[in-house]
Image 1 (cartoon, rainbow, N blue to C red):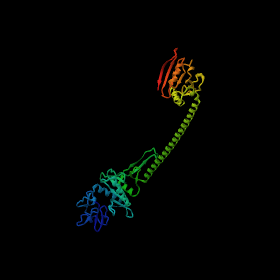
Image 2: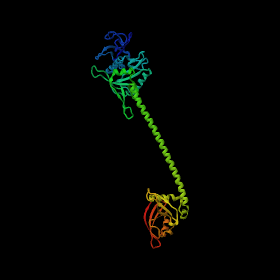
Image 3: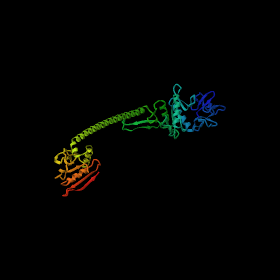
Image 4: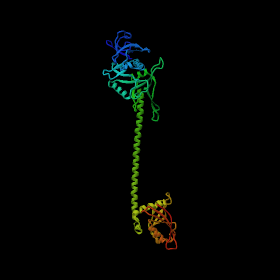
Length: 423
């Protein structure tokens, strides 16, 4: 059943209007024998009657399967009429079941402006529709410069992507249709980034919502997440202010992060440069140390290229900071090794001698460690020992460390007793 019909002479009839939109009375069409009225959708014959809801409409004597007007539900029929009545109550002219000339759309209710141009379509959409279909049908209206508001009774998958309202059917006689989703306000207090902000759907009579939409007091606003809501300009401005504040904060954060990364890169670069300079300084110091000890290497037969490895083994074995003195006769022309008792200490103390002359080992201090690079040197020390000796064999070629206590004996060959080994 529909609200419109076509008469050959009178033209288009609208049962929701007192004069049927053509200057005729309801009595001229209701129960009039021989009157021929046709459906504007399928061109089939229709008749005028009043439903048990006291609503005037036109019906098909034989309902065709392919006519949307003939097969719409009672809920759709009543909601369509309510939308038209709400638009008229707001002071606008609204026509039911209007199609464009190309028949690319047919509006349940078409609201026209003061120049009799289609202005906004109010669609009672109760049947299933996909989001893509909703976009496509909305775009068809937009091609003719017509806005649209889709109205449903239940949550639909398309209602968040096109301008829409969700309404509630009156529960009892005397109650009005109620909007309970789609019309929203923006809450944000206090207006700081720390305060939560959100859209809250408001409940209002359908007539008020239609009036606000037609008068431009609310607009369809598409949020950053693609959700479309009807809201007042003040709430839109508030949401924009919040978005701008968030964007400014994000910009400031990105700038701060960029500055932090730049400063960190500068610190890393400075540290790398410092490490490079220290490495160069140490290389120079090692080169100078090797040059200083060149006579010692020549005298003892030590390999200068392995001296750094030997020094690292000494440092690892002692676990202390070390430094070398100058070879001299006080310790058999060996190289004095000084160690710092603790990392906090300032003074270095004599801790050992590297490769002393074995012939100078008579009366050697018992707590003074002799350091040699191989077992050949150990054998020479053993052969010349006159007192108990502590010997550390640190081989830079193999990386092995032996700690040997040499015990002197009257016999020509001293007894050797290992006291430890690592490597």
